[in-house]
Length: 234
Image (cartoon, rainbow, N blue to C red; front, side, top):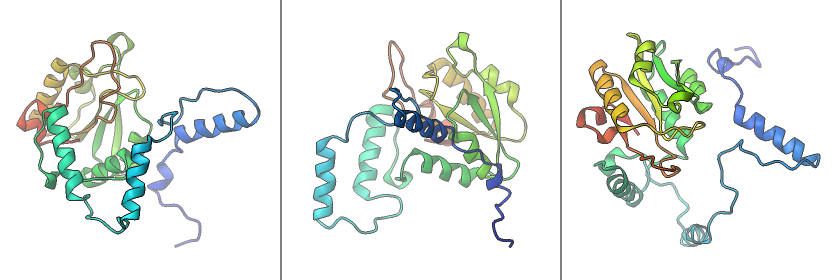
């Protein structure tokens, strides 16, 4: 291998737009500009003291070694309880994998189910990481535009215009980053029926489920039927 050669897959990846914006914000702040940054998705307050204390006590107790790859049993059991309580979903700890964050979970999912040439439907506007991870996995992101007059909600009609026999996966991000759009139950049911009929997987990113306003109601697509749950990675 020639020194300095970047692989063909990595060379297709665009730089993180989030990091580019964040770096520009830091640069302008250093010049004295007062800026409220919406670049990175992190709170503007410190980690709560009870969480810091729990981490400290765990380290003092020697809880610093390798754990089970999928996460410790107690944590996976707690996640199952959360999914049942908040999302009406029944999962067992063996179906839960703890990751280092949503990005790793998404990357693992794309790498696991995408083959070269598979098409992945991505409603837009979208989180900028989705397309790049799909490319890394060998898939092709197929953008499905949403409309402002529909509050940027994805609909079955829009999906059908982009569906082909190569469609393998739909990425569903509701509540959505960056639009804030929340899927309605009727739309989700229609989409779920379509996905089941066509044998299409859905990777559902629900990380913003508690950031909802007005009369919006978050619903997990996997809770609609056993059939769609069998084709869902949440």
